[in-house]
Amino acid sequence: MTDFIESFATQQLLPPWEAEKVQSWGFVVRMTERRIRDYLDTYFNGAYPDRAPYHYTPVPDAHFGLLSAVHFGRVASRNKRTASRLGDGKEAWDHLQHTEVYLVFPALRYPVNADNLLAGEPTLVWVEPFIFSDNDSVVFSSREIWGSDMYLGTITRQVGLPRHQLHLDLGTWGTRQFTPRSKAEMVSVLHIRTGGDSPIGLGEIFKQNPHLQPFASILVSSGGFAGEAPDGVPPSPYAGGDELNNLKQFRDCFDMSAAIYRAIVASKTTHTEIKNINLFDTSKVEIAFMWSDGVRQLLTTMFDVEGPNEPGPPPDHGQAAKDGPVTTPDPSFVGPPPAHFPKPTKNTPNVMDWQMDRVVLKAELAFSFRSKARFEVAGTIHSYGQTPD
Image 1: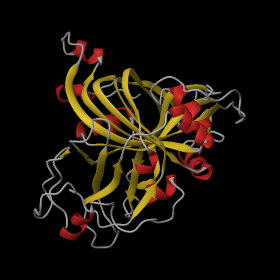
Image 2 (image 1 turned 180 degrees about the vertical axis):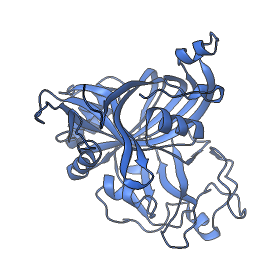
Image 3 (image 1 turned 30 degrees about the horizontal axis):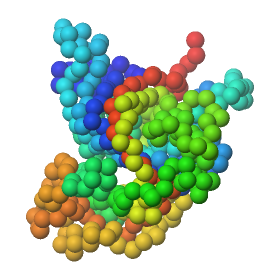
Image 4 (image 1 turned 90 degrees about the vertical axis):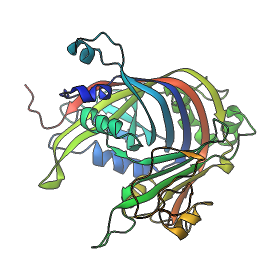
Protein backbone atom coordinates (compact mmCIF):
# COMPACT_ATOMS: atom_id res chain seq x y z
CA MET A 1 0.00 0.00 0.00
CA THR A 2 1.38 3.41 -0.95
CA ASP A 3 2.03 5.60 2.11
CA PHE A 4 -0.68 8.18 2.72
CA ILE A 5 0.30 11.65 3.99
CA GLU A 6 -2.24 12.15 6.72
CA SER A 7 -3.46 15.20 8.56
CA PHE A 8 -5.23 15.59 11.90
CA ALA A 9 -8.58 15.55 10.09
CA THR A 10 -8.01 12.12 8.54
CA GLN A 11 -6.79 9.94 11.41
CA GLN A 12 -9.95 7.83 11.48
CA LEU A 13 -9.38 6.89 7.83
CA LEU A 14 -6.17 4.88 8.17
CA PRO A 15 -6.45 1.07 8.30
CA PRO A 16 -6.57 -1.27 10.08
CA TRP A 17 -10.14 -0.67 11.20
CA GLU A 18 -12.08 -2.51 13.86
CA ALA A 19 -15.86 -2.46 14.03
CA GLU A 20 -18.42 -3.40 16.67
CA LYS A 21 -22.17 -3.89 16.21
CA VAL A 22 -21.77 -5.28 12.70
CA GLN A 23 -24.93 -6.59 11.02
CA SER A 24 -24.36 -8.49 7.77
CA TRP A 25 -26.76 -9.73 5.11
CA GLY A 26 -25.58 -12.00 2.28
CA PHE A 27 -27.33 -13.04 -0.93
CA VAL A 28 -25.84 -15.64 -3.28
CA VAL A 29 -26.69 -14.80 -6.91
CA ARG A 30 -25.91 -16.69 -10.09
CA MET A 31 -23.20 -15.45 -12.48
CA THR A 32 -21.72 -16.95 -15.65
CA GLU A 33 -18.23 -18.26 -16.33
CA ARG A 34 -17.96 -16.04 -19.41
CA ARG A 35 -18.72 -12.83 -17.52
CA ILE A 36 -16.31 -13.75 -14.71
CA ARG A 37 -13.53 -14.69 -17.13
CA ASP A 38 -13.98 -11.51 -19.17
CA TYR A 39 -13.83 -9.40 -16.01
CA LEU A 40 -10.63 -11.10 -14.78
CA ASP A 41 -8.97 -10.83 -18.20
CA THR A 42 -9.86 -7.13 -18.45
CA TYR A 43 -8.83 -6.05 -14.96
CA PHE A 44 -6.17 -8.52 -13.81
CA ASN A 45 -4.68 -10.55 -16.66
CA GLY A 46 -3.82 -7.79 -19.14
CA ALA A 47 -0.44 -6.12 -19.74
CA TYR A 48 -0.32 -2.63 -18.16
CA PRO A 49 2.37 -2.44 -19.71
CA ASP A 50 3.79 -5.54 -18.04
CA ARG A 51 1.90 -8.59 -16.78
CA ALA A 52 1.48 -9.38 -13.11
CA PRO A 53 3.20 -12.54 -11.81
CA TYR A 54 -0.30 -13.99 -11.37
CA HIS A 55 -3.07 -15.28 -13.61
CA TYR A 56 -6.68 -15.21 -12.41
CA THR A 57 -9.33 -17.72 -13.57
CA PRO A 58 -12.93 -18.53 -12.62
CA VAL A 59 -13.44 -21.27 -10.05
CA PRO A 60 -14.83 -24.37 -11.81
CA ASP A 61 -18.52 -25.05 -11.06
CA ALA A 62 -18.71 -22.10 -8.62
CA HIS A 63 -20.04 -19.36 -10.86
CA PHE A 64 -21.87 -17.37 -8.20
CA GLY A 65 -21.42 -14.02 -6.54
CA LEU A 66 -22.14 -12.85 -3.00
CA LEU A 67 -24.15 -9.63 -2.88
CA SER A 68 -23.82 -8.23 0.65
CA ALA A 69 -25.14 -5.37 2.73
CA VAL A 70 -23.25 -4.62 5.95
CA HIS A 71 -24.02 -2.03 8.61
CA PHE A 72 -21.02 -1.09 10.78
CA GLY A 73 -22.39 0.41 13.97
CA ARG A 74 -19.10 1.61 15.46
CA VAL A 75 -15.85 1.74 13.44
CA ALA A 76 -12.46 2.99 14.63
CA SER A 77 -8.96 3.13 13.17
CA ARG A 78 -6.36 1.03 14.98
CA ASN A 79 -3.37 2.53 13.19
CA LYS A 80 -0.72 2.69 15.93
CA ARG A 81 1.83 4.52 13.78
CA THR A 82 -0.50 7.49 13.45
CA ALA A 83 -1.14 7.61 17.20
CA SER A 84 2.58 7.59 17.98
CA ARG A 85 3.27 10.37 15.48
CA LEU A 86 0.77 12.60 17.21
CA GLY A 87 2.20 11.81 20.63
CA ASP A 88 -0.97 10.17 21.86
CA GLY A 89 -1.35 6.78 23.48
CA LYS A 90 -4.86 6.11 22.25
CA GLU A 91 -5.50 2.72 20.72
CA ALA A 92 -8.37 3.88 18.52
CA TRP A 93 -8.85 7.04 16.50
CA ASP A 94 -12.31 8.54 16.26
CA HIS A 95 -15.45 6.49 15.64
CA LEU A 96 -17.96 6.51 12.82
CA GLN A 97 -20.69 4.33 11.39
CA HIS A 98 -21.62 3.46 7.83
CA THR A 99 -23.33 0.93 5.60
CA GLU A 100 -21.74 -0.88 2.67
CA VAL A 101 -23.29 -2.70 -0.28
CA TYR A 102 -20.96 -4.76 -2.46
CA LEU A 103 -20.58 -7.75 -4.77
CA VAL A 104 -17.74 -10.28 -4.56
CA PHE A 105 -17.01 -13.51 -6.39
CA PRO A 106 -14.28 -16.16 -5.92
CA ALA A 107 -11.36 -16.59 -8.33
CA LEU A 108 -8.25 -18.74 -8.53
CA ARG A 109 -4.92 -16.87 -8.54
CA TYR A 110 -2.13 -18.89 -10.14
CA PRO A 111 1.55 -17.92 -9.84
CA VAL A 112 3.20 -17.22 -13.20
CA ASN A 113 6.93 -17.65 -13.96
CA ALA A 114 9.21 -15.55 -16.16
CA ASP A 115 8.11 -17.55 -19.22
CA ASN A 116 4.48 -16.56 -18.54
CA LEU A 117 3.53 -20.14 -17.63
CA LEU A 118 1.46 -21.26 -14.66
CA ALA A 119 3.99 -22.32 -12.06
CA GLY A 120 2.20 -23.77 -9.05
CA GLU A 121 -1.01 -24.49 -7.21
CA PRO A 122 -3.68 -21.78 -7.14
CA THR A 123 -4.77 -19.67 -4.21
CA LEU A 124 -8.44 -18.84 -3.80
CA VAL A 125 -9.12 -15.10 -3.51
CA TRP A 126 -12.19 -12.89 -3.73
CA VAL A 127 -12.68 -10.13 -6.31
CA GLU A 128 -14.95 -7.11 -5.75
CA PRO A 129 -16.44 -5.59 -8.92
CA PHE A 130 -18.29 -2.83 -7.04
CA ILE A 131 -18.86 -1.44 -3.56
CA PHE A 132 -20.97 1.48 -2.26
CA SER A 133 -20.80 3.24 1.11
CA ASP A 134 -22.97 6.00 2.58
CA ASN A 135 -20.06 7.65 4.44
CA ASP A 136 -17.88 10.02 2.41
CA SER A 137 -14.92 9.66 4.80
CA VAL A 138 -14.92 5.90 4.27
CA VAL A 139 -15.18 6.38 0.50
CA PHE A 140 -12.21 8.77 0.57
CA SER A 141 -10.12 6.36 2.61
CA SER A 142 -10.99 3.38 0.44
CA ARG A 143 -10.29 5.12 -2.86
CA GLU A 144 -7.26 7.24 -1.99
CA ILE A 145 -5.43 5.19 0.64
CA TRP A 146 -5.75 1.53 -0.24
CA GLY A 147 -7.37 1.78 -3.66
CA SER A 148 -10.83 0.24 -3.57
CA ASP A 149 -13.08 1.46 -6.37
CA MET A 150 -15.76 2.49 -3.87
CA TYR A 151 -18.71 4.74 -4.76
CA LEU A 152 -20.64 7.14 -2.52
CA GLY A 153 -24.31 6.31 -2.27
CA THR A 154 -27.44 7.08 -0.30
CA ILE A 155 -28.44 3.91 1.56
CA THR A 156 -31.67 3.68 3.54
CA ARG A 157 -32.93 0.78 5.65
CA GLN A 158 -36.45 0.36 6.94
CA VAL A 159 -36.69 0.20 10.73
CA GLY A 160 -39.42 -1.52 12.68
CA LEU A 161 -38.68 -4.87 11.06
CA PRO A 162 -37.21 -7.76 13.05
CA ARG A 163 -33.53 -6.94 13.46
CA HIS A 164 -32.30 -9.58 11.01
CA GLN A 165 -34.86 -8.76 8.29
CA LEU A 166 -33.92 -6.21 5.64
CA HIS A 167 -35.50 -3.66 3.34
CA LEU A 168 -32.66 -1.63 1.81
CA ASP A 169 -32.67 0.93 -0.98
CA LEU A 170 -29.48 2.25 -2.59
CA GLY A 171 -29.15 5.31 -4.80
CA THR A 172 -26.31 7.43 -6.15
CA TRP A 173 -25.75 10.56 -8.20
CA GLY A 174 -26.03 9.76 -11.89
CA THR A 175 -28.27 9.95 -14.93
CA ARG A 176 -31.13 7.77 -16.07
CA GLN A 177 -30.35 8.46 -19.72
CA PHE A 178 -27.29 10.00 -21.35
CA THR A 179 -28.33 12.93 -23.53
CA PRO A 180 -26.72 16.28 -24.40
CA ARG A 181 -28.96 17.87 -21.76
CA SER A 182 -28.61 15.21 -19.06
CA LYS A 183 -28.34 16.45 -15.50
CA ALA A 184 -27.01 14.57 -12.52
CA GLU A 185 -29.72 13.47 -10.08
CA MET A 186 -30.19 10.97 -7.27
CA VAL A 187 -31.20 7.81 -9.12
CA SER A 188 -32.04 4.49 -7.54
CA VAL A 189 -29.57 1.65 -8.08
CA LEU A 190 -30.66 -1.32 -5.97
CA HIS A 191 -33.61 -2.56 -3.94
CA ILE A 192 -33.33 -5.53 -1.54
CA ARG A 193 -36.08 -6.92 0.68
CA THR A 194 -36.31 -10.12 2.72
CA GLY A 195 -39.75 -11.58 3.31
CA GLY A 196 -39.34 -14.17 6.04
CA ASP A 197 -37.14 -16.91 7.47
CA SER A 198 -36.34 -20.17 5.73
CA PRO A 199 -38.52 -23.13 6.78
CA ILE A 200 -35.55 -25.51 6.32
CA GLY A 201 -31.97 -25.60 7.55
CA LEU A 202 -28.74 -25.04 5.65
CA GLY A 203 -28.04 -28.74 5.10
CA GLU A 204 -31.45 -29.29 3.54
CA ILE A 205 -31.04 -26.19 1.36
CA PHE A 206 -27.85 -27.63 -0.12
CA LYS A 207 -29.47 -31.03 -0.61
CA GLN A 208 -32.26 -29.39 -2.60
CA ASN A 209 -29.79 -27.23 -4.55
CA PRO A 210 -26.74 -29.46 -5.27
CA HIS A 211 -25.47 -26.96 -7.87
CA LEU A 212 -24.63 -24.68 -4.92
CA GLN A 213 -22.28 -27.14 -3.25
CA PRO A 214 -18.92 -26.06 -4.84
CA PHE A 215 -19.65 -22.42 -4.02
CA ALA A 216 -20.99 -23.36 -0.58
CA SER A 217 -17.73 -25.19 0.21
CA ILE A 218 -15.76 -22.06 -0.66
CA LEU A 219 -18.12 -19.78 1.22
CA VAL A 220 -18.07 -21.86 4.41
CA SER A 221 -14.32 -22.52 4.36
CA SER A 222 -13.45 -18.87 3.75
CA GLY A 223 -15.70 -17.53 6.49
CA GLY A 224 -17.91 -15.75 3.95
CA PHE A 225 -20.81 -17.52 5.62
CA ALA A 226 -20.64 -17.47 9.40
CA GLY A 227 -20.89 -20.72 11.29
CA GLU A 228 -19.74 -24.32 11.09
CA ALA A 229 -19.86 -26.32 7.87
CA PRO A 230 -23.24 -28.05 7.53
CA ASP A 231 -23.57 -31.77 6.92
CA GLY A 232 -22.88 -32.78 3.35
CA VAL A 233 -20.73 -29.72 2.52
CA PRO A 234 -17.07 -30.75 2.13
CA PRO A 235 -14.21 -28.33 2.83
CA SER A 236 -12.90 -26.20 -0.02
CA PRO A 237 -10.25 -27.96 -2.14
CA TYR A 238 -8.32 -24.70 -2.56
CA ALA A 239 -5.81 -22.95 -0.33
CA GLY A 240 -6.59 -19.44 0.86
CA GLY A 241 -10.07 -17.97 0.74
CA ASP A 242 -9.84 -15.07 3.19
CA GLU A 243 -8.09 -12.56 0.91
CA LEU A 244 -9.66 -9.85 -1.26
CA ASN A 245 -7.70 -8.68 -4.33
CA ASN A 246 -8.57 -5.38 -5.96
CA LEU A 247 -7.02 -3.33 -8.73
CA LYS A 248 -5.85 0.06 -7.48
CA GLN A 249 -5.50 2.51 -10.34
CA PHE A 250 -5.43 6.20 -11.12
CA ARG A 251 -6.59 7.18 -14.60
CA ASP A 252 -4.65 9.43 -16.96
CA CYS A 253 -6.58 12.72 -17.20
CA PHE A 254 -5.52 13.07 -20.86
CA ASP A 255 -6.30 9.45 -21.83
CA MET A 256 -9.04 7.84 -19.75
CA SER A 257 -8.34 4.45 -21.36
CA ALA A 258 -4.91 4.44 -19.70
CA ALA A 259 -3.77 4.49 -16.07
CA ILE A 260 -0.84 6.47 -14.68
CA TYR A 261 -0.65 4.06 -11.72
CA ARG A 262 -1.92 0.52 -11.37
CA ALA A 263 -1.35 -2.12 -8.68
CA ILE A 264 -2.98 -5.21 -7.14
CA VAL A 265 -3.71 -4.70 -3.43
CA ALA A 266 -4.59 -7.51 -1.01
CA SER A 267 -6.82 -6.96 2.03
CA LYS A 268 -8.74 -9.06 4.51
CA THR A 269 -11.84 -8.74 6.71
CA THR A 270 -12.10 -11.06 9.71
CA HIS A 271 -15.37 -11.62 11.61
CA THR A 272 -15.35 -12.70 15.27
CA GLU A 273 -17.96 -13.18 18.00
CA ILE A 274 -20.45 -14.33 15.37
CA LYS A 275 -24.03 -14.76 16.55
CA ASN A 276 -27.69 -14.53 15.51
CA ILE A 277 -27.26 -16.49 12.28
CA ASN A 278 -30.48 -16.51 10.26
CA LEU A 279 -31.49 -18.06 6.94
CA PHE A 280 -34.08 -16.39 4.71
CA ASP A 281 -36.76 -17.91 2.52
CA THR A 282 -35.24 -17.22 -0.91
CA SER A 283 -38.66 -17.38 -2.61
CA LYS A 284 -39.57 -14.20 -0.70
CA VAL A 285 -36.31 -12.29 -1.27
CA GLU A 286 -36.48 -9.32 -3.66
CA ILE A 287 -33.29 -8.19 -5.44
CA ALA A 288 -33.75 -5.57 -8.15
CA PHE A 289 -31.14 -3.39 -9.88
CA MET A 290 -32.67 -0.37 -11.59
CA TRP A 291 -31.79 -0.02 -15.27
CA SER A 292 -30.23 3.34 -16.12
CA ASP A 293 -27.42 4.47 -18.38
CA GLY A 294 -25.36 5.19 -15.27
CA VAL A 295 -25.24 1.56 -14.09
CA ARG A 296 -25.93 -0.18 -17.38
CA GLN A 297 -22.29 -1.18 -17.97
CA LEU A 298 -21.99 -2.56 -14.44
CA LEU A 299 -25.02 -4.81 -14.94
CA THR A 300 -24.10 -6.08 -18.40
CA THR A 301 -20.50 -6.69 -17.30
CA MET A 302 -21.31 -8.73 -14.20
CA PHE A 303 -24.64 -10.40 -14.97
CA ASP A 304 -25.80 -12.15 -18.10
CA VAL A 305 -28.34 -9.48 -19.01
CA GLU A 306 -28.69 -7.09 -21.94
CA GLY A 307 -31.61 -5.12 -20.57
CA PRO A 308 -34.29 -5.01 -17.85
CA ASN A 309 -36.37 -8.14 -17.28
CA GLU A 310 -39.20 -6.53 -15.27
CA PRO A 311 -41.12 -3.31 -16.02
CA GLY A 312 -41.27 -0.37 -13.67
CA PRO A 313 -40.06 0.09 -10.08
CA PRO A 314 -40.28 -2.53 -7.31
CA PRO A 315 -43.56 -2.96 -5.41
CA ASP A 316 -44.37 -0.05 -3.05
CA HIS A 317 -41.91 2.21 -4.90
CA GLY A 318 -44.26 3.49 -7.58
CA GLN A 319 -45.41 6.63 -5.73
CA ALA A 320 -42.05 8.27 -6.16
CA ALA A 321 -42.29 7.64 -9.88
CA LYS A 322 -45.62 9.51 -9.95
CA ASP A 323 -44.70 12.38 -7.65
CA GLY A 324 -41.07 12.82 -8.67
CA PRO A 325 -38.06 12.90 -6.34
CA VAL A 326 -38.65 13.76 -2.69
CA THR A 327 -36.60 15.43 0.00
CA THR A 328 -37.88 13.85 3.20
CA PRO A 329 -37.48 10.14 3.97
CA ASP A 330 -40.19 8.20 5.72
CA PRO A 331 -39.61 7.89 9.51
CA SER A 332 -39.54 4.11 9.08
CA PHE A 333 -36.28 4.41 7.14
CA VAL A 334 -32.83 5.18 8.51
CA GLY A 335 -29.85 6.51 6.62
CA PRO A 336 -28.17 9.77 5.67
CA PRO A 337 -30.42 12.63 4.54
CA PRO A 338 -31.08 12.51 0.81
CA ALA A 339 -29.22 14.78 -1.55
CA HIS A 340 -30.76 18.09 -2.55
CA PHE A 341 -33.80 17.81 -4.78
CA PRO A 342 -35.63 20.65 -6.55
CA LYS A 343 -38.65 20.67 -4.25
CA PRO A 344 -40.20 18.53 -1.50
CA THR A 345 -43.25 16.40 -2.07
CA LYS A 346 -44.99 13.91 0.16
CA ASN A 347 -43.33 12.00 2.98
CA THR A 348 -42.28 8.64 1.51
CA PRO A 349 -39.41 6.16 1.95
CA ASN A 350 -38.54 6.47 -1.74
CA VAL A 351 -36.04 9.33 -1.55
CA MET A 352 -34.66 8.40 -4.98
CA ASP A 353 -35.90 8.47 -8.55
CA TRP A 354 -37.52 5.09 -9.28
CA GLN A 355 -38.84 5.89 -12.77
CA MET A 356 -36.98 2.99 -14.39
CA ASP A 357 -37.42 -0.63 -15.33
CA ARG A 358 -35.43 -3.16 -13.34
CA VAL A 359 -33.19 -6.21 -13.53
CA VAL A 360 -34.48 -8.78 -11.05
CA LEU A 361 -32.02 -11.38 -9.72
CA LYS A 362 -32.89 -14.58 -7.91
CA ALA A 363 -31.28 -15.30 -4.53
CA GLU A 364 -29.97 -18.87 -4.43
CA LEU A 365 -29.11 -18.55 -0.72
CA ALA A 366 -29.77 -15.71 1.74
CA PHE A 367 -28.57 -15.26 5.32
CA SER A 368 -27.66 -12.73 8.01
CA PHE A 369 -25.51 -12.62 11.14
CA ARG A 370 -24.06 -10.22 13.72
CA SER A 371 -20.37 -9.97 14.57
CA LYS A 372 -17.33 -7.87 15.31
CA ALA A 373 -15.07 -7.23 12.32
CA ARG A 374 -11.48 -6.23 11.62
CA PHE A 375 -10.36 -4.90 8.24
CA GLU A 376 -6.67 -4.73 7.34
CA VAL A 377 -4.65 -4.14 4.19
CA ALA A 378 -2.11 -6.92 3.68
CA GLY A 379 -0.17 -4.87 1.16
CA THR A 380 0.51 -4.30 -2.52
CA ILE A 381 1.31 -7.64 -4.12
CA HIS A 382 2.24 -6.19 -7.52
CA SER A 383 2.79 -2.73 -9.00
CA TYR A 384 2.64 -2.52 -12.78
CA GLY A 385 5.27 -0.77 -14.87
CA GLN A 386 8.15 -0.99 -12.40
CA THR A 387 11.55 -1.89 -13.77
CA PRO A 388 12.99 -4.95 -11.98
CA ASP A 389 16.32 -4.55 -10.17
